[in-house]
Image (cartoon, rainbow, N blue to C red; front, side, top):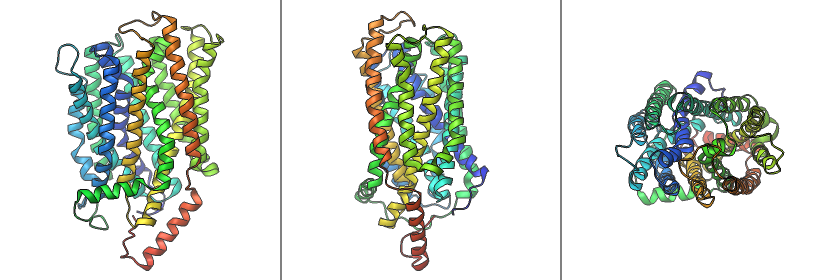
Length: 474
């Protein structure tokens, strides 16, 4: 591939693979804790612990999946075989996760096993899919565009699933067992169809024998390559900023039902509007982010967006504490909250897209040093950071609920105010600290547009002088 503009249809085909990730993210981040705690009766901390362990196991295996993807050598290329093999098993296990064949609370090991298998199969789809982005184009801005499309598709699928959950599957009862089964079936169908469609439609654009045959499989060599890649200075700086951001995100998503139902007391109509607000915030980012990258670069944009997102999200809680917020349960309260959600989510998504796009530039920096491209390894590293941090965030969420002594099986408006206050204080303090840490490290990311373009020119010159020297360009 080259640095020419990427055809719109190829951007859409690549982005369609992210639909599966959006469905998974919605389920794990928003509903799984509620389903296994409030519907099936498992202890909140036990559910959180299972999800954290599954995330850690998945995160530790991701680098090996990424390395194996980099080493895959077929006439269909390095990524497509994974995208054809993984989605159908993923859909089956996803449905079982939401329809556990047990009466009463499932065992800890049952939930843990299902969560691990789902996450590993999703990684086998997502790591190869996202690794295609730096293979499709080397252009600094086109990579951002491809990631804008991927995030738009991923968020859209997640929000559509969220909307259907609140308005169709769980419309009459948030604790409906049959509703969650229907939710799981819908998600399974979307996941399978999206990944297979994305792979099939990209096939003629990306299929082909890789430029170099990988060395024979040796476990110690894989360890060495993974450690070497993750020791790249730019990756370590990115990881520090992303780690804090994803802990905050995981914590927020896991607590979202508790925050909206019990802290802000939104009703069913208002909850139906909530996904629409999120959708338009993502569309706003899709339409504007490239301009900020052109003017300020990815690192500065990501850091500033992180501060804006954190501040906008904390303002409503501060006003509520100062008793300056409108009465809960009123339309004024809901729509003021939606305004801050719009701003916070738009800035937060902009920060995440910026950070994810930064990883693509690390690939050429690593290639310049090692002579080896490692798209799969670095994007698996991205998922390693995200999943580990999200797991910590979910664990924080469960711990906060336990420390606050939040009751099980209660209705909105019936929880004692001191319990709500304890939960809000713990949550807001964590969001503030994590936001500052994330913004600091993202601002220090060392690769800008000029350095990236100079590196591409140097790699091109090397390839012309020594085309067999091991520095293969995509």
